[in-house]
Image (cartoon, helix red, strand yellow):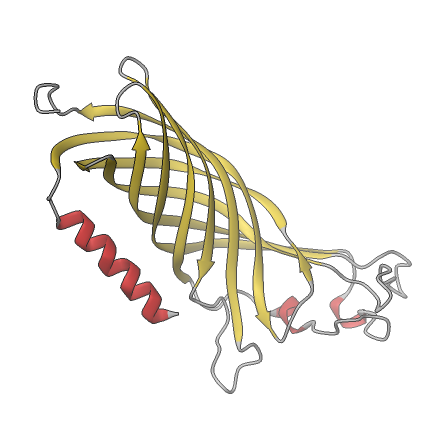
Amino acid sequence: MRSIFVIVLSAFCCLASAQVGKYRSDFSIGVNGGYIMSDVGFEPQVTQKMTSGFTGGLSFRYVCEKYFSTICSIMAEVNYAKIGWKEKIETKGGAPVINQQTGRPEEYSRDISYIQIPFFAHLAWGREEKGFNFFAQVGPQIGFYLSEKSHINFDPDQANLNDRANPTIRQYKMDVENKFDYGIAGGAGIEFSNPHIGHFLVEGRYYYGLGNIYGNSKRDYFGKSNFGNVVIKMTYLFDVIKTKNKIK
């Protein structure tokens, strides 16, 4: 997976330096925000359902060329994101596990805050200045840990392990160990552009983490603990630098 990360990063750099189509020099900045669903790929497995959060921040785009019908850009963001995981604590029959001390179904989730910085090779097809286009983008993403908070309604030392289909609970007392996250993000969406008001983008995106939140050496408990994020967001961009129409 680290090799894939390097390959995608190399392709992104090649796109940034290449100039084989019709020249463009459009720079836009703006804001973005949206809904994010996340989980963590634990090994040993921790049964989960995706937890919801939010993401938002600043967006930057530089359109460098138009190659035939493809509009080629470089896009980056600096976002705050609340991600984490929510456990699905059930019996083998699918019923909620009742804690023997509280008499209530056991619940556990973890919220983790990050600053996420994705870099995309952004390709679009359709209207360039006025109207709609379809776009796809892919590239590396890095993240910097800010804080975390656990939500639990029982004493971890009194968890009902006898009835649980999945008895893994070591994570309850483990804070995030690796403060730097990295992986690959990609998605697709639709953009509407108007020369007077700017650009509006709606997209769906998936992030696959290549790093782990916990150590994964032979002496560590978890062999894998990487993020998976599904993001639905909107972005607004306005032009700061525009290529002259006679060049286009």
